[in-house]
Length: 422
Ligand code: EPZ
Image (cartoon, rainbow, N blue to C red; front, side, top):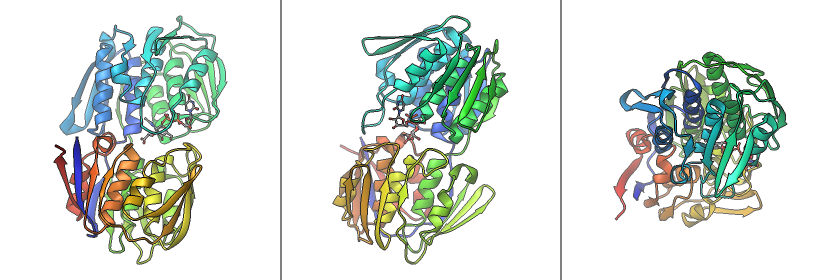
């Protein structure tokens, strides 16, 4: 297992290009299985989760070509015949559960393992299954697998997501566009990832109303055509590097290939810390303040503060003057990074789904352990401002969601080396 060795204390100055979005790519790759011809998707990041998902599609019989030097994926669904997604692949990545909606939505049958996913907390899929049953899909469980069965046309109906769920919205869209006479998803997720999926499905020929709102109405169409589309830039990678730009008083970062429209209220929240945020089309310039102000945050569904930036924001607050707190209302236990930051010298503690932070605390290098994707990148952010050397272990978590992290941070001044862990 690889690790990062990071010498902290050097400022970050320069330009970082933002990659394609992992969480937007996975649903539209799954949508490629619904077409009757090849789908081509550009701006796909070279990430472990993409490689894993491409293999899941190959297992069911799709032809998937990842032209890595062009960040392009081509999906030919015409050979799909094995309508099962196995445990040993699905357990590696929760989003493989999208295969349930894609396979039953196109072929009327799917047998998909219940998902694994991140190390933290339970990650239920009850909304996915109840929503499919509300549509008229027959759901049964068999030794850790979900079996979904549907005839040519489903009566449809409506289903309200409580809480709003990105994954459930994605799965219900994939299952309904070719099957349900009329199906209404209420309290649907409005994340840009969902909007891109809806727009892609409509370009393929689907009938979806309410795109971008929390009420989606789907009406069955007879067939969908393969398309050529561009994936969105990664809004969470972007937010992560914006936060990195705020964490050392001499940092100045130019971020390119961005879509600031996907950040909701995040830029204004970052400005409240005293950080300069200049948005000019697809370029965002970040200039750190001499003194970082402590600004508390509470996560919410889109367009609220994203839970995927919760750990990064709390890490930044260890370098801000004063007391602050971060509450996660989406995941109540997504705080596995806290004890690791305490090992570096941070003064922070949890009370239920809130972490309380006392800043500014000097951080000192140590060995720390990655636990999940966003917790891991937070350890890198902390290590870059900690004095001396920090070892970040188990960075395979990072490789799931941050394309070429060390090759993006090194050129702007970070002293970061990847080494094979013996
Ligand atoms: C997606 O996960 C993202 N993953 C997550 O990003 C992100 O944190 C999350 O949305 C919230 O924005 C991908 O897009 C691949 P949810 P998802 O269903 O769809 C509860 C990252 O770091 N829930 O929106 O699994 C659930 O427990 C990853 O890139 C149910 O109760 O999240 C949570 O409290 C981590 N029943 C809330 O809904 C269900 O059936 C939101 O989860 C499904 C979800």
